[in-house]
Length: 635
Image (cartoon, rainbow, N blue to C red; front, side):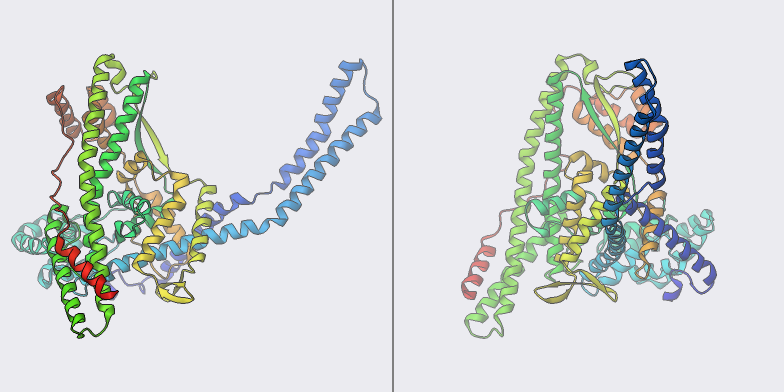
């Protein structure tokens, strides 16, 4: 059964070999092109330049200058002197450059090795992190998480889709139905897909409702498969929203638990696709005109950034706490399913922390009675309670900061509206066509030049060598304190931090505009990565997938339009709507709704709280009391 999941490899060995040879050749060319920017010697061009300067240029310049100064042709000895001087000077400079390039020739070779190593290890680390994500769940949940990753693969065969569906639902008959749906989808017979979906709708909905209680994310993916929809190379893969903010928050607060393993995977994918030539388009806006309006719009943009980060930080920290409790086996995936809202998680988290505190007190009592086999059990449970308590307090603080950020955003919005009313409408409206003043949309591309790719790879290689991170068999190992250990969850999170630090000088991840732009785009599809691929094949695959992703600006244009209308009181005129539709593919219905929003809310105060934050109560005294007693007992 497993052999049929991705198709048999023995049917077309010759074509498969040719494909892999072609991939490897293209990958080698990609690596060499990046590394060659460090080491280029233009031999022919240099020699021709010397001869041209020493010959015609020197003769013409000397003849013209000497004749204008002295009114006669220069003597032969003078011509010979200048000719010899130019040739010798050029040759000395040329040979000096040759010696310099020869002494640093190892730089080119080292650059190629660095690029090769980073592409090779990043690809394997992406696969390793995916495996860690599955491994971090309890044994009963792992088949479901593995099946979810299978369903995200584009090349999955009908047998593979059926196998994944059976793992998710436990219904073999329903899995066979999905396998038939996938077969018809591949043949383009969508009428049969609709027939099967209609005939078995009740059974499908029952299975999906049951699955939704355990994994809403898996339910969404499986529902699309039953509808005859599958992942597409051109669309790419949706990014986990706010993953950059969570990684940066982990750096700023020196708390790796603020990022999830999904964030680690997203950061590694971002680095891999940028190194392999991905160009990510984005839309931003700027203002030029009266300085008071310019300052007001800068303040409003800054307050919007603070508010958006505060809005995400509370829920992100709740999710980080839920992930930590699952990773430490204090909670099951069913109790705290990934993908559910913070409102739904908070109640379950409180119950689990009550149970942890109760377990700690019970262990303390056993220790007092001398019945505890080892104090390490109490120490481990107390550490979990302490870390959980810190994450809980951080989440509560995040929601408190959201209220303050909301007040600051309202004040900045009122200031902008007041100034916009004072000045002419032309100054505060979206401008199209010629001219410089007013609000204007600017297109930007986030990418790495060849020199920057080499610099990023050298940074990462230095870190990988420092950690002595190496692959043995199917797993990664790191060496610390003289001992070799498998790659841990903490090590994976630290790697994501280092990747962010390597990219920051070149793409400026810390800027809110860059974060918004990246969140509005899809990542390259990397489901085709395999552990046994060579570095050249991985480079060719990464480059090909980066080229395949469509430069879809519709989502970015719609998000920008929402910001302009709701936050900057921009009147989305018919001309502006037509421009966003024609230039970027925005949905006309979406823009029409925004126009109605602007008409109905003009001159009325607006609250930016789109959803009431969940009530995160103060940490309970029982939690503190259990932690204090455990520490007293251990000391």
